[in-house]
Length: 229
Image 1 (cartoon, rainbow, N blue to C red):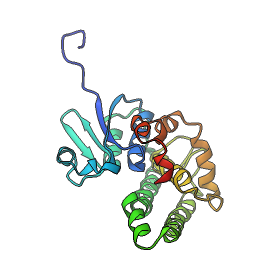
Image 2: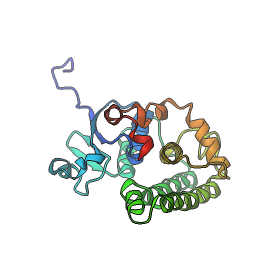
Image 3: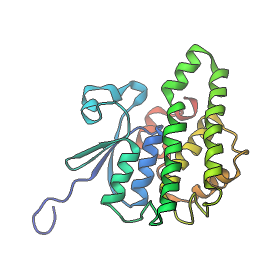
Image 4: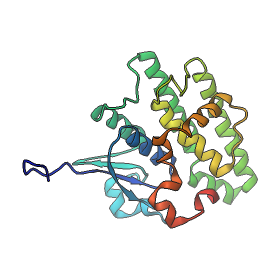
């Protein structure tokens, strides 16, 4: 309760799965903006995203989803752009239109051209039908293609971080993708010097480190699975 007797605003409610790189992005954005939120775990390994209860939140059955009062949003990019407009503290997009466009492009390379091709259902389908070797080959090809494009896109714009010396939308999308591939598949980043340098910088950003998969409450319920899936 507030001092004038009115109810305090409800916490943001994040529907998340610790392994989900899309959820990871939103956790980073929430942390960067200093927003307090409640964590609601949705266990993708138990198919909880297809439960009737969750499908009322997000009819397509994906995490993350975010509830802010009466507003319910799904899709990490939509959520982050909503947070950017409603909570402008620690802006994730620069004022400069050209730099803003680079951020949009980098975020979309990750969210449209890399992550969907490497998510768990796709990986499981390839392994079940073609085998483990084919899965690893697919990861190398698709991640390599995306990372090569990102190296070229960012080479004239990067500073300490992806598009300058401040964390931006591009970093919010890049960090989970690089970290996830490195941890889950021991992906070799040596061919991507700029992204490797950014990855080192991310190790010193509290908002990213606090959003790491292994630090989420549901990671303790499935000990060790992050490195195995």
